[in-house]
Length: 284
Image 1 (cartoon, one colour):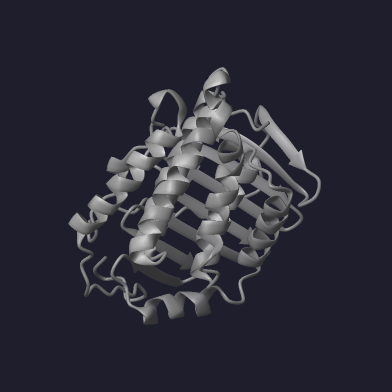
Image 2 (tube, helix red, strand yellow; image 1 turned 120 degrees about the horizontal axis):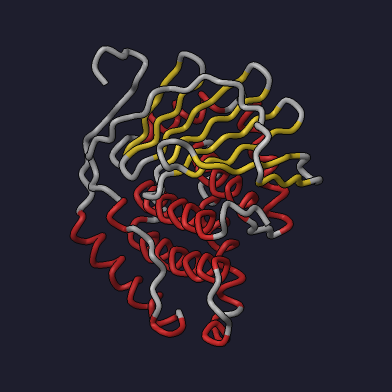
């Protein structure tokens, strides 16, 4: 990103990919044994690109985040958010929500890479998440966190987001869905975003909490999974359990580091994309 002085980027450590691959392969084998019938969820692990790989960022979108009238609409009373789902001309699944002065828009690719736009009054934020880095834009400020960014970059991002009204509104909505253990498509879209944004603001345990929450139902029903007819939702459940186990395996080796969170978020977002596509963009 030459010629852009606001971007801060640091690269000085390369993660030993061979060690990671060995550990995660072991976790994947155990996860496969946990699912019935030997069925492995279709999580595109190839989307987790190697450390240091560059991803061409999409153009910055500056638009009103108010939800548009679309066929698939659902209102959640507790967080006072109305969600709508659609697809974009680029084949992404898009989900939007609005309530009061808060706007939420997320565009997810089949690979799991996504762009998240948040707005609360005059405060606007954009997060672009890929397998190798997260780009955060707030006003005229831009920061990039990658696999090998040092702690000073993470601290800078925390300061950048510390007084954000948009982040606060997202985290409040996420806390409500988490307390209700809601894993519906709309709630999951917020929870997955809240996990990553929470980690960026210093809540390092957020990804693990959400990973466990989204896998909870599948874990409780794992013994009878083979007796249930396949459905979009049951496939989502099984994928969430597999991804959670993969995340835990990665975290044992890397102590819940950035690489594990980045890998987990791409896997879960890709599964969410498949869930919405399978269910015809249904939000119930």
